[in-house]
Figure (cartoon, rainbow, N blue to C red):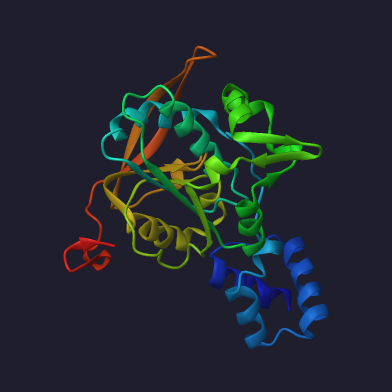
Length: 276
């Protein structure tokens, strides 16, 4: 039976699931639905119900600070055009709100404040619901995000048992449920963050995942993966960029890699000559 669930995880989510997680999912399905019939598995996986057992939802504010150094350095080029961002596999939303805090901080001193919008998605409905609420525990503020931690002072409200994201950040962030094995809704983004999730996908599905992300990136749009993930990301649409970013507060330099889309988006995202 566990083998059946493993195959379903690979088919629906494109991942190699942990055996212990599969056992917990099996116990849940048997206890809730009474069996592992094909229609039951289709319901549990297509709804994202299984995702709560099989996906990693570890996240915190300003994780991997070098990428936020990079984004800070890129922001001036979007002052006149605006900025459309997407956070893929966002878990409970810390990354999306961290980006919003950084842009809001930049706008305070910008000659032309950036108009921006952030779409963020995950295949687990429960974590997306939590992200929309914007309520977080103490664990979401950690020392390895310390170089940007001061930005949370104006972005988060301290509660007795955690934090609440302030409303001025929520208005620019839209959360929705989506499985990266499927094509994304038609749109064009300047930057897609897809960090610390690519490593969980099986090699035979990785090109499909990158193609789905490429389809919603503008030509010359940027794809940012986790620090440890870039070596496995190879796709004909992207060219790899090596960049040295400086942390102004800690006076350190870090080499990071990201990807630029070198091909225009597919014609399928256009209708009557207009971008949807």
